[in-house]
Length: 528
Image (cartoon, rainbow, N blue to C red; front, side, top):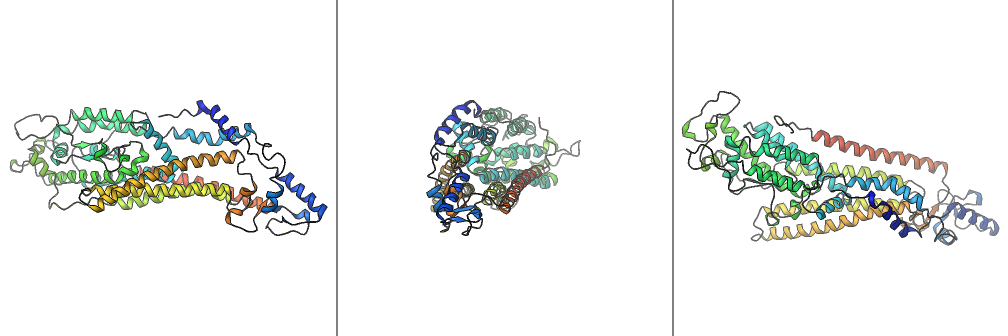
């Protein structure tokens, strides 16, 4: 999906100019000059302050005025309603700073089935950087986790291709068929070594590298082709070539009634937060089946136990005879001994969630915090309209992330039970839906808020006595700094440098961390 931002740039700028044409920046120097002239004439120094906000005894020492004096003397100047707004300057600032960032949204990977879902993906990304960072990092951590699980415990002919596909299928709901014999046939039968997995490798790798708007359809078509090549076990062992599957052993697309959260069906990666728990559960079940088959092969136990182990000409491979059998025998071959009850929560999932949360919050705090710090130390020092806008944006972003993450946890909890029979599961599912909808509404509001914040900054909307004072903090003796002292200018410059360093460092650290995390080995797999 591509948003044609530049094509409508002129119209958009005209609309923005019309909305802010009555907002003009005050001539602060002229205002202070008038106030000083009046103070000299009347010998009334009330409201004239120094850089610390203290009253002055000499008019020449005044660099700051009280908030009440500002509203009574400055905002009544002729030209406040129509004087200083310059459309060309506004358009230049808007095009140079805000528009490029909006254009970057079109470079995000989308691929949903419907355009409205792609739009919501963009809104969630802009409305909650914490959620976008979390979805990215939890995906990387899950991929690293399942690759390590397989590399340490599984050595089976098609396991390397399998783990490559599984770790790449986090953009759609991943489910195992209720009849585990179906997937066990994919694991064990030699006919499946070069069918299902090889069809999906180039498709999935291409999905991760490209951003076409028909990704959902491409993946669906590739899976349909793979279905025609996957083989199932047969009761009659004399059949040379097993037939194709009548039902899918591994489902990568599902209907809305098959998932607890509709967001699981949306393929844009920002929605991976909703799939990570169920994906990890499914990936763990697949790993356990491969591990069971790998351990039995390591102990030289064939699928048909009474037939005995047949040695292969290649010591590193398994003879096909050892991997054939009836559906019941193949299913039993992929079952861990002891039949221990499996948890609905994959091992280490909460640790990965905490790490992903810390990484995404660090990114958000570093970038938004850098902007907040810069505005905080611009005289008048303290909380103002600009810094408050950044604070609201960051706070809402965090709230949205918390709401949607909690929604995914409650949905996964309810999936472990028959929610029609369990009161707790029904309550959890209801709260999950409520939090998801509220989170999305907040994301829409927050994405609009951050765009308006930038527009207000470029249009001098914040250039008022209220916004340039420290009255937001509830100060009774609020004041407005008009002329910066050398010390204040030095502090503001240091804050600007510090904020820039903080933002760049946090962004660079996040990129470096994601690069290091994604560098897991995928032995034996070629990206076609």
